[in-house]
Image (cartoon, rainbow, N blue to C red; front, side, top):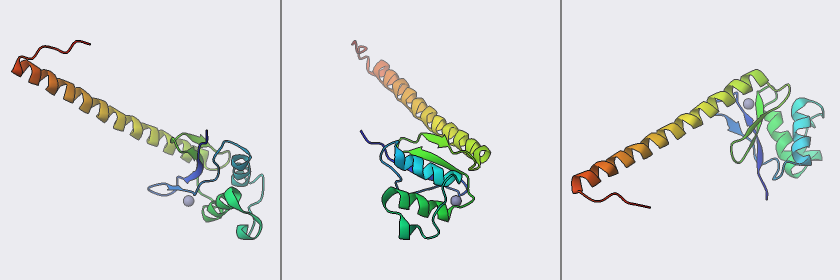
Length: 132
Ligand SMILES: [Zn+2]
């Protein structure tokens, strides 16, 4: 099973997501992280020397040289990247999680509302309760 991975730059509102930098948590992700942390250099002209996922990662890193970044997968799971504005990234991740939870809360409220309306309707119509 594959999972798409991306860089997400948190220095923009809304945040900016890279093109796909891997389809697995594998050596492509590791190579991208090494460039993001400065462990490996980002080529001056990535198009000259890189291709595929490494090229996508390098091009994005060139466009966001000093921005706080996280690694994000297609399910919205985020990972901090050492030395890439972790404090700011952590705050942004916490905001994103709080936002998702608020959305989920609203969804559950609506579902509860629908249940209450259905119960009120059944009471009004004198229908028997559904039994499983
Ligand atoms: Zn940026």
